[in-house]
Length: 284
Image (cartoon, rainbow, N blue to C red; front, top):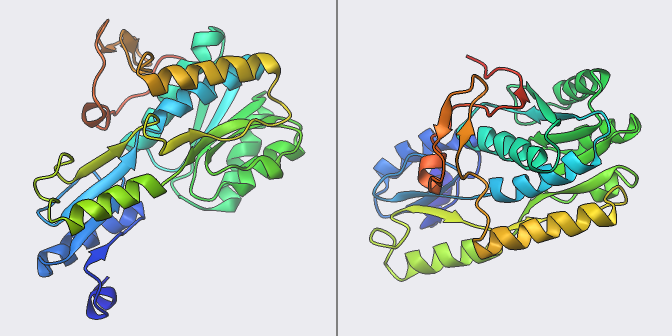
């Protein structure tokens, strides 16, 4: 970041989860440079954050998994128990449960964003337990999809379309279309409206804006699955369906979202629990 500033950069996008605190330190030293961190929950006068409500499409992806499973056992390989990953797990399970009340989601945390060895171990462990549909929140997604395909199970994706890696078992997934959001953020900064913008330094795009999208369906997605998931996606985009509308309870039965309530994105990003139907504990 310091080298970029020395080279004349006036906008910097630190994109990794681990870049936030260093970016905050650099931002203090360079008040004339604007920083936009991906997914962060802290902001400063010249540092904003951006992300998207990708848990919305994960709800629809969960429906695909819930309809496709034969064992009623879904698996989820996750990096760290931050709010965004917990939201995705919860949305996936809520979606699966909405179409299949018997479906459960077993979670494994790898404590690493990209470790193919740990990913393969986690995926095989879940498959050995009878999981027949796999989901994930990792930065490198190839290993889990290919491992699942080799074992004859089904895959859902995250971040990018991985259908080519699973010609038989791919269902669908959640993918990003960053372009519109990046253009909007840069224009806001160029217009000198960053500090007083509608975002207040915190950009959160939605499915309605086209930043969050469904990946193409694969061979494993039946016509019934496609019809249901597409209808859900359209309902989410129109605002008719909000996945986190109460009552929603955690694993212990505690009401986390009261009946009829729908927390906004900011409130949801403080999520620190797993919903009923999720098997596995949040690492301490």
